[in-house]
Image (cartoon, rainbow, N blue to C red; front, side):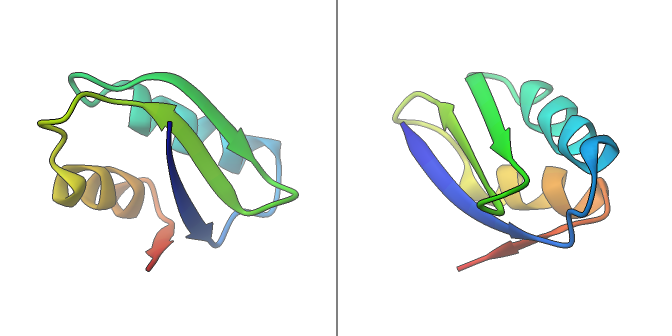
Length: 66
């Protein structure tokens, strides 16, 4: 399970937007986004491109925090 911290989410719509963005990345599955904890957890293969994850979240209007 991979966990990333996300800034900028404030409502259920935000959670859905991030969930949809992550689910559209090839190889990502089991996405769970927590508004309360400001993070997303998901399963991914070893060849996951974290730059693609960051871009998908940013394109949805949020920020991945290192």
